[in-house]
Length: 113
Length: 133
Image (tube, rainbow over all chains, first blue to last red; front, side, top):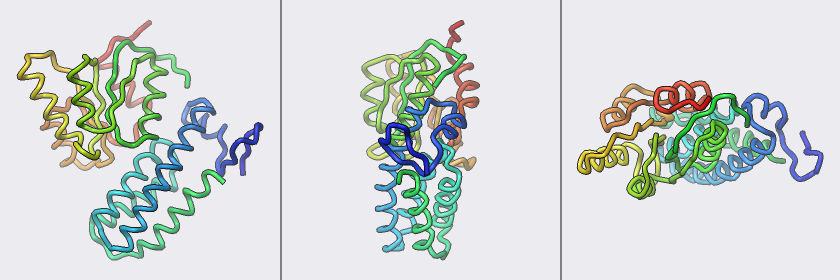
């Protein structure tokens, strides 16, 4: 766990390392992670509904949204899993989408603690 | 974000995802560019009709009006009003050749696959914008 000195927010990833990796300032990374977290939570909610309805188009749509923004931030585990879900749904593969959703949800939840 | 590369120009960034918009804005601003943003194709058309841009970055999948349709409409506006062409750079997480082809056929000048990397953007901007020394 990584905590800012001012104790404002607790992050599951090292902000300084991420800032170096992206060549951004720490404040910018914080803003980006916070936005990513909030938008991904919305997409995850919709993804869970789509999985419950076995709606492949919607599963692909919402996992695609998470894939795009996680890729920019080099959140590679989230990017790879959302890409796997999207591609499986596009190919209408019969995989266990609910367990993939839970795994993805857990990864996103670890960003801000 | 700091950048040694500086450009002169005004960018219209069309992207529905808020975190992706901010990510791109940080990069463009570090490059010294002025950035206007639109959340979908409809908003992009409104902005395009009211201001001249040096370059447009256009996402593909957006609500209300997607990037391919918005690109097609911008080209129509340019042609019917005999306007100078504004370069349109397609942004897409769909990196298959067919997706790229659809965007280019609609009138986009370049296609960049997501995720976007700074070096890729620099190469793209080098082709279109003036570099400030």
